[in-house]
Amino acid sequence: MAGNQQLVVPQAKAALNNLKTEAAQSLGVQIPADGYYGNVTSRDAGSLGGYITKKLVQIAEQQLSGGR
Image 1 (cartoon, rainbow, N blue to C red):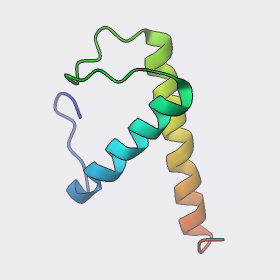
Image 2 (tube, rainbow, N blue to C red; image 1 turned 90 degrees about the vertical axis):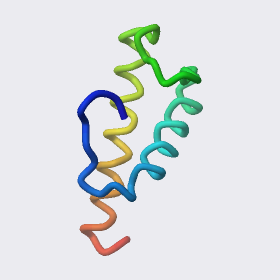
Image 3 (cartoon, rainbow, N blue to C red; image 1 turned 180 degrees about the vertical axis):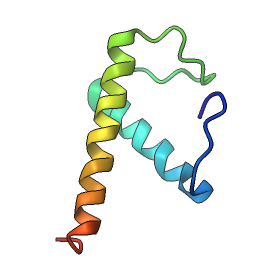
């Protein structure tokens, strides 16, 4: 995670990185090896963020509904 973003649950870092990798593979976006996203197009970065947000909402909905 870049900048001053701090995780509420630090143990979730690995899961979030896995989600980021899954999103990038699904969308065909190359994740920079050095972690610098300055050369990623706005469109690709927005697609990644949208995909990750959609998946996080799905996970939260499943948890709130008792895993159904």
